[in-house]
Length: 347
Image (cartoon, rainbow, N blue to C red):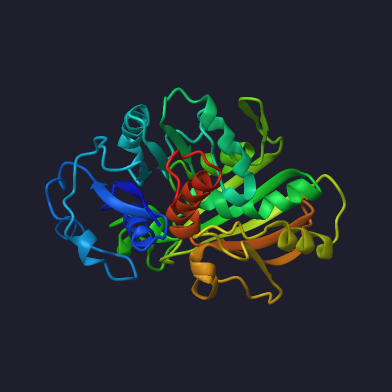
């Protein structure tokens, strides 16, 4: 099997490290190039960062030299974990040079011609890449880390019952702030009720994701979302408490049935066999117990009950650096290959 050569942009950061970890033994992709900021360039990867992943760093990757964020003929796909302060222009430059850019950064998510994709939810939106101005390149984005779990829980409800209003309160893990991120003095014995820019993403990105592809544009789904985002003292795993107002009447059995029967295994290397699981135990889901299900790619839902303000409410959990970041981006790349959007084919 011939593997497609890939690059990791922002390789020293938390999302970049997760990309490295997930790509290290991938059956379709092979890391041939790693890039980071000027302070890391020219160094061996192992000397430029503190490895924070659970699995050991391979010797091959550890000894790779970090290159500038400049396109090269040594790879076809660039996985971007770049900071949003620099991601926008660099990703455009790579796409203009003919590279397939799979971005976890926020910069291009809401661009009209850029798909904002969760493969199980709106893989058909990848058609937008055909309208992009890049000759052989493209930019595909995955959503905010909290939005991915939320959108996966909402998609079955949107399709079966319709959704009018949502109120969501997130409890987001510290790994979402990167490394070194939030200081231990600030987060231990504490909850921080503000994450810069997070609430705006949660209130807008689902409308595009759950929208309808119409010719060369996405018609946003019409609903209202109110979000309150909090940082909590959990390492990995974003929780959310969600209340929804539906367009059609539904009972609890119908809602659980819709959620658990909607998704199928995409049969891709990184796709979970069970993308969304519902737990009957009223104490579940919990980050410690459920964030690593299906290698971190499963969304967990529980505590469905009537809401006295809207219609129904429930709790959900997703692994923020896997399903919520690098894992979703990797799944997007796999879907692009499967659907033939990337010229190179596996042999």
